[in-house]
Image (cartoon, rainbow, N blue to C red):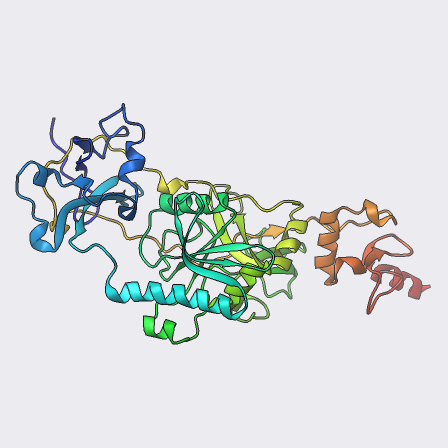
Length: 431
């Protein structure tokens, strides 16, 4: 059989040596070549920070053959991640850097952001500590902020690449401990985006962060917008993809700058306070027509309540799926490559990580038509119908009531209220 020599991604290989078990692992096989070890995949894909850095070794180095890593600032020790090429996600092994920790500047960025979160929370009178382990000791929050009502927010400052599985695992562990995770990224391609509650800030020098320079939330916080789909609307139609106007009432989530009118930008300090007090809450909204993908976002509690009323839900929206389709590992069943590939960047092919923070709407939701006639008994009006009427008429739900003449829901109470709807007024005036 011809040996397959193609790997995916710079300085990567499809095989590795497990120093703990004394095993040769073929990353292109679904069982890694060891069907009797079902936990092997989880063990080797764990973060280097959570295992022995010398657990995985270059096969060439282990066999005493030429290993080119040490001459190029790399070590013979390896880490495993998903590659990306042509829509496939193979497991690949790469050499760790001799010093694989973050650079001093990057570490200072992380430290400065963490300290700013803690200092902000303390200034608002909230309980806050840095480097707090969960009760089961499975993870550590960079900063844990506790609100007056007992809400606990676990801030995770993640300025480096982290595998989606690690994001899911650590987030799930936090939730099990009654901690709401809040991940902070600075890169629009960060894999944590839309895989857990998140916020993206600018990539700025650590001295600016520590010095109190404005830190705007660029992604991850949205506002609910509701509009009547008519010719005069500045929003496009969700049902016709902008080709016309359907006359229905649409709603969707937008970044502050894309709201009409534009909303004020949300700053890091705002989110520290509002997340801990419950004024801002995390939700997951599936994309229209796809339950396998969607948006994680922070929103105001008022917007969340209004959204749940409109979609007819009484409970929080569902969580994101544990693993998205584009994260599924591809096993090509190749023969293992025993050579060291460190430094041969031209030998490999790798797709760039896609931009995940696109700032696009979620796909929206179209409310049911406002009922033409309903009983005078307000208890018989369905909540979703009341929400549709409220949005269409631009008034709060408690100002709704039936027209005295035809029972059409209308603005019956409060300022600018009337006894008859517009149609009935015209008929009465025509007499």
